[in-house]
Image (cartoon, rainbow, N blue to C red; front, side, top):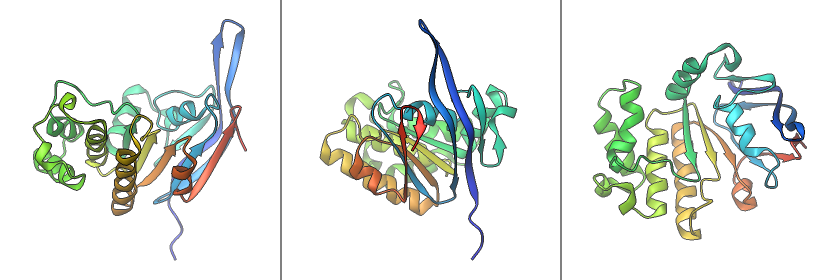
Amino acid sequence: MSNPVKVLSAIHLGKQVLSSDGSLTILHDISFDVFQGESVAITGASGSGKSTLLSLLAGLDIPSSGCVELVSQNLSELDEDGRALLRGQKVGFVFQSFQLLPHLTALENVMLPAELNGLDMPKENALHWLKQVGLRERANHFPKTLSGGEQQRVALARAFIMKPAILFADEPTGSLDEASGNRVIELLFELNQANNSTLILVTHDQALADRCQRQLHLQGGRLL
């Protein structure tokens, strides 16, 4: 068997922010590795630092100490544009709030990363991914005419169109009813497996965390 490929390393990550009471430490000395094709849940109570950790891992925020290596790139060595370019080519995102652009149709929302990153045949690719999430016939609908579950499935199609090496999902079912949430989760795991992507999932839903191969539990900004 070939050795597993490391796609993400957190190396002694720390994050402090300034508050009215001085410096507040959100994350303390966090280290772990994630390998290609793995699904990893980051769990913990509200305020334990889960979303901050996700932002650091994805290069959306900069650590106060330590570093992140994402697909063999040290994010600390890249400027903001460099990190954005790496995310565009290698990373997919699914957020609790969908983050669809309201003035674009479902199709245009899914096409956007493909167009920004110069993918061939963006429209054909976008239609393919909308079909994968069961929304081909809703391609020309605007987000406000779609249910929450449908919007999140559009967000899934958008996340996968660049065939990301790694997918970050932050409470992906947090604003959905149970039936819609279950459908989104089935699709998320199905597409992730078919694409051999790595999934990093922030959730407070233990049943969802249990579906991942591994769990990292944060408490008070520390990895237990």
